[in-house]
Length: 91
Image (cartoon, rainbow, N blue to C red; front, side):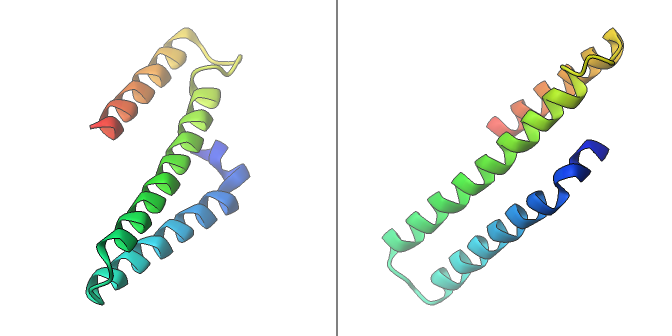
C-alpha cells in the first residue's frame, strides 16, 4: 500500500466525501424524506464508491501487476489479489 501514499490526501478526501454522503442518507431516512430523494442520494454514494474502487484497482494493477521491476511470481500474486478483490466487490 505504500504506492497509495502518493495520493493519500486525495483518497482520504474521497472517503470523507463518501462518509458525508452516507451521513446525509442516514439523516434523510431518519427525517422521513421522500424516497426518491433518498434513492438519488444512494445512487450518488454508490457512484462515489465505484470511483474509489476504480482508482484503487488501477493503482493496484499498475504497482502489483504491470510494474516492470516485478518478478513473475510477484506479478502472478498481484493478479490473484486483484481478481479476488474484483470478485468480492462484484457480488
